[in-house]
Image 1: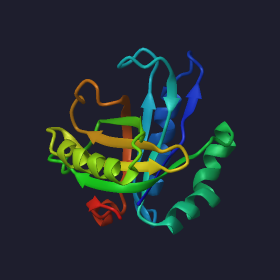
Image 2: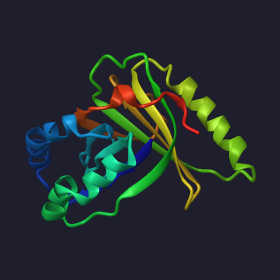
Image 3: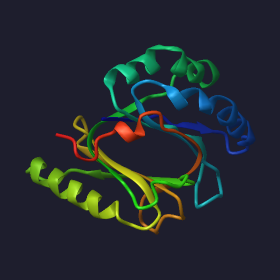
Length: 193
């Protein structure tokens, strides 16, 4: 599993209805994309849920590297580049994935939480983070959750889809406009190494 996201921060007075219409029209295109576990079409709106910015920030969990590469080098990503310029794409190695108790429902919210892996023993710290993710996955309202690591910065990312309002302190909150999940059922659960 590979985690990927890019964020396009928009002007403070930007009409987010434009992004909503974009997602409504183009979101279903990836509903059958090979190698894609899920893509959540995420936004933050200035003044909503404490967001200081307007932002379009899709998040992906790729089941295969080939699918990710086909998207990045193909027409899928080119549409973003044509409309907004080429954004920086963040990428993490997948460590764990879990379905939550609300996995049969449609998620409405997502959270991302970044933390530094400061331990002198990264293996033990990752094991502890995986165990914490498994506990987190049992929280009411969790659709699914993933843990990933950027070994360049030693930064852990916990990404969670929610069907309810997330509890306070679970990270940066986004609205989910659409969820493409062509191979979500094929993402292996548990630890990924």
